[in-house]
Length: 239
Figure: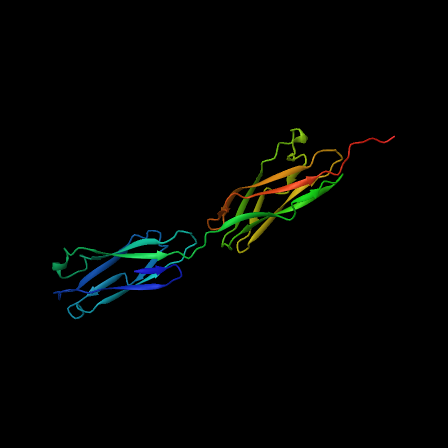
């Protein structure tokens, strides 16, 4: 049988080959131990001398879950319940297995980064800011947490390298972005500090470091975002 996580159904039938001398009862069990792929009804079948040659139908239903798990194969086993069967001739009857496949309906979600601007002028005082946006490719029923990092040089390094010094030239307002359940985006800010130092044009290197939640969301490839800090100071002196 084949069903889908959308709740579609399929059926199979069971019938006896010979008339029993008493009731024959079959129990139905499965290997879907966490009950996330299939359900079926009924879970027991009883054949009598009056209905032994009439096929009984079992309906299998696909169950929805939030996992991107592809097509899953389950097995429903139909076996004689010897404790409830009156005709002992059926006690030795081998159990029969019905294979059921459940097709997935969940989307593989990925996260990307983008910036409100790829370059800012530093300024002599105060702060400039660039909005960092994390976007998930499809809404999720749970929040997505996106961790950011920087491959820039540390704050105590020389400033002439062309790479902005973290905590000296700039910092994250928050280094974690939360995309709420049901939303497609979340944001934080890169804060650029103004100064009066004549220095080279510098670059901020922002990396997507971690993704969690979001129904199994992952980083879309390797996500990086760069911001250029344009210096507006000139070396000189006044008499």
